[in-house]
Amino acid sequence: MRFSIRVSTAGVALLAAVLATAPAEAGPRLRLGRVQVAGDGSAAVPVILVARRSDRIAALNFTLRYDPSRLQALSQQAVVGTAVERARAELASVTDEAGGTTRVIVLPEFSPTFPVLRGGRVATVSFRLRGPVRGSRERWVRKSVAIEEIIFGDNQGREIPSSPRPRRD
Image 1 (cartoon, rainbow, N blue to C red):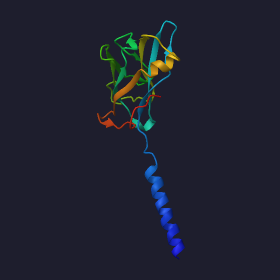
Image 2: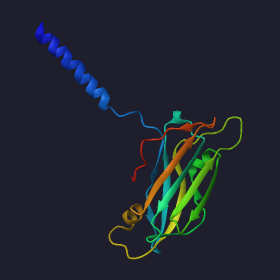
Image 3: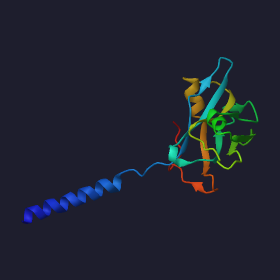
Image 4: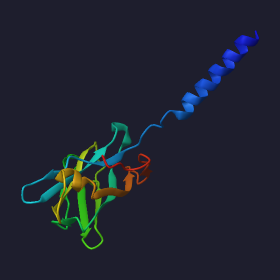
């Protein structure tokens, strides 16, 4: 009897340990897509929304921070991505070249159904490489940018929790 109690207690402790270390269900997140660098030194940096169908994202905003000593923004405006187009949403952006940021906001179409963002490319920001680049130009660009200050919203105006931290994929 004593042996079976120990096994049972150990089993419960093991189950509790497994449940405590299991990752929480991840919310939506943004990640960098595949960077493309052209022969003239211009680089396209896509920002990708990773979301489940159940996330019901109607709006989002984020900051793309970059190192202005390594990259120069080629435009004040980000290019609208397919995820935004499919949702019939609007994208607006502004770049602060001195501060090294591009701030992007996506707002839903105002309609009774509020189409949602289903995932995919949200925006693409274009840069020109500055200074000498050693190694892979694509990797050099990826190490020079980060997605920050991410906020997702649903069609009721409530914030949707995102994954714990943005990643430099």
